[in-house]
Structures are given as C-alpha cells and as structure tokens.
Length: 326
Image (cartoon, rainbow, N blue to C red; front, side):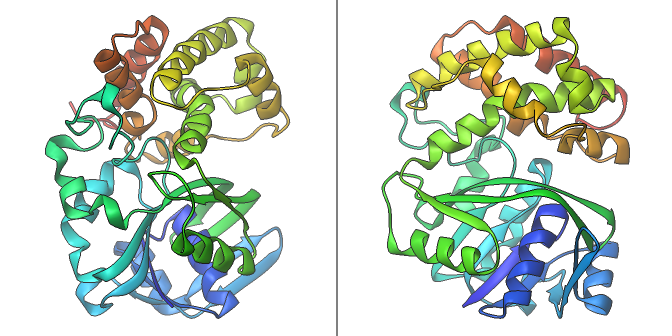
C-alpha cells in the first residue's frame, strides 16, 4: 500500500514514523524546509519516552516526485490546508483516499447537512476551493486523540494517547475505512472504526474549541485553566452553546461540560496545540477550532455570545501578535 503523509510535523511525523517502522506500507512524505532536510538525512524519528523509533523516509517538497498513492494523510495545520489543495493533485489516482488527520472541523463537515445550506463553510474553505480540489467521495474522516510535539524539525516526541477514529463522512462503514483502521492498528495505534465520524469530530471539538484559544492567549497549561472557576464558567457556557449547534446538525452531546472538564483534568499540566503554536510563533488554527462554530451558529440562527467573545478575543490576540490574518 502506498501512503503519503502530507505535512510531516508533530501528528504527521507520529503517523509516518510508526507506519514506516511497521513495514506494511511504502510511506512517503511531502515536507518543506528544515523538516524536509531532516527526513532526507535522518529518516523518520519518533521518541516515545526514551525509546527511539527510526525508519527510512522518502520525502520531497514536490508531490510529482512521489507519484499517485493509495492513501494520502493530510497532517498540516488549518491555515496551510489551502496550499495542500493546490498541490495535492499529483498524488491522487482514480481510487486514492484522502484522510485529514487535523484539528477542528474539516472542510467537508457541512456537506449534506441541509440546515447549514449548500454553500461551503467560508471560514475553513473560502470559495469552496478545497472541496473542489479534494472530492467528497475521496475523503475518509479521522479524529486523532494524541499529544505529540516537535522539539526540532523532523523529530517527534510522543507524550500520551494513540487513539485514531476512522469513518466515512456520510456515516456507516466501508471496506476502505476498515482496511485503514486495521493497518493503523497493526502499526501500533489504538484505531477504531466509527459509523458516525461527524459526531466524533464534534465531540472532540466541543472540548478543544475553548481550551485551545484560552490557553494560547493566557499562556496557561490546561491544569491552570481548569483551576480557575471564572474561566471555567466561560468555557462551560460556550460549550453549552456548541452543544445546541451540535444538536441542530446531527451531532448531539451526551455529556455535561463539567464532566468533560473532569476528563481533561486527568491529563494534567499539558500544553494545548494552539498554545504550542503561539509560543513558537506559528499561525493559530482559530478558524477550524472556533471561527467555524461562530459561522455555523450564524447560519443556524443560534445565539452564541460566549463563543463569540472567546473567538473575538483570540482573533484580536492573534492579529496583534502576527499569528492570525488581518
């Protein structure tokens, strides 16, 4: 099986290293800059505690050099997705599946949800360019439950979690989704098949859409955020608003915000991905994590003052610090 990882950062490097080390697939990567150089010289490198997994990597900044694939895993940050859509065509054969392993709401999420209308979600797919470049029929949905970081280009450090949820965007199951989940499970991931991947995506977003921007703005680790009752009142109010949106788009939440926060508290003093990005001066994924929720609320006519406040403050913070477009 030919698998290309488009974007070999933290999540992409995690997936690529374990798949390459398992030896069942021919794994390549589209990467750039220092990450590309590191992959070409040292191969995939993944630290899980003190244990190093290393495997040869075929990597290029030109997708044409890698050829058509059976599966393309997109593992870039949200702001880079438009450029992926412009460059991905040489990797796509007639039956190539495309699996975005990314944070937040994917570009295909609103497809077929009548309440959201037929227009693409502008906050995450302006003008529908991504959907045009990557046909809905190609997409496999994916939710990643793992904490990883890149202490230096081409090196991934795994902190906790190996969960991957795979599913068809339209729901139900399929042979290709099962095959992808089985392959990932044999590579060492806790891969499961979902018959309702949209709901799994929304559930993860439900917690991340508040924690990520608030920690990025304040510099607080998750434990410090959870310990502040005023901040948690704001988070929980926003989560209740997001739960109303979820119920309108077929993604109900069967949990209270308070119970979800107790689960997050068990993870301890970790840095969210957006906090890591902000500290490193990388663009913030605000649109995929909360901007799109703001947009969906407008389309559905749902009042979301708390979501709007968090998004507005985080957007302003990002613009002031050069981490979000003006």
